[in-house]
Image (cartoon, rainbow, N blue to C red; front, side, top):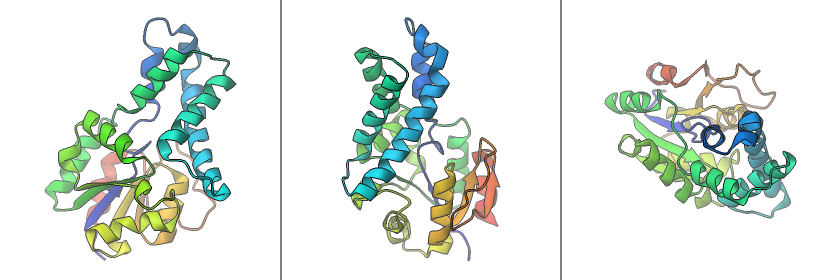
Length: 227
């Protein structure tokens, strides 16, 4: 079945989730953060994901921005950092996450090939629209789909349903691109053709659903879409 639509996860896939901590750490007066920003970035991201799953299980939902704030608060406390100005700066930077260097060229190549392109993310519309605008990739996307629209987070099937419904296609006509192993498993189990951008060389998750393609960065996505 030919690919007609290329759907991207946002955080960690198109947008570098480490960028907020990295940029803040390089600013004047942030010597403490400069010593530990990679671990701050990792812990913040992991706690963000854990809270999205745990709140789903607990049936006590919050939107992804609240979860992002809660995850940062936990992380800063875990590292012994109590700094309201730094907290505000990190959250502001999260709205302006840098896209990976190859992202714009890859999206442009997909559009030139006549494919639909979109984001499908757990992020709120406000978060996603801010990141898209900051990265300058809006003209290269046909839509930005937020899990907020269906009230549950990935890897719930209801979230993946949004893509074929929006583009009037079969799941097998979608190339789903994600850097998250759990998302790759969920999307593949749903029925998407999945390209997993495995930047860290991690093992494939032991979950139902396996990616059709494993890439080191986004540059191989157009080739996956044309197979």
